[in-house]
Image (tube, rainbow, N blue to C red):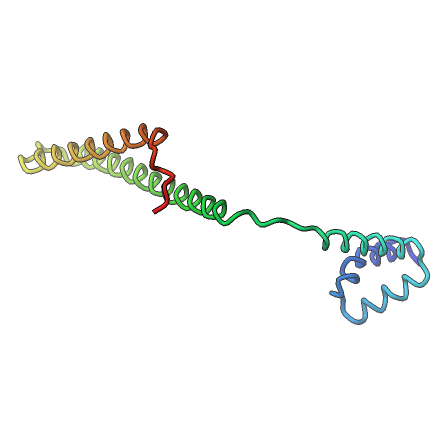
Length: 147
């Protein structure tokens, strides 16, 4: 038998063990195994490995740990996406506003000035409350209390 043919059969041993081969390939492997002690030994090792891995027991973590992992992931993902959207939108709006101001310069109206003051004030309040909440979070006694 040619060496490349031998390697081809060896590459099929795992699929043969799992009964994933076509009937023709399975028969080719079976016939090869009758003549090749080396491949029979490799198949035996694969069978032992399959048996040993099948006997492994992975304990399930307690339900409380699963809930904590799910909570952390969902909070981190949504918080991260939210921050990216807020920051990206703010940068985009700032760039757009600067470009439009440079292209169409005119003195702002009283309504635009007052609207800008209200908007800047609201943003400052929002970010100051958010900053304070984030600074207090590590010291919050009730953050782990389940509702």
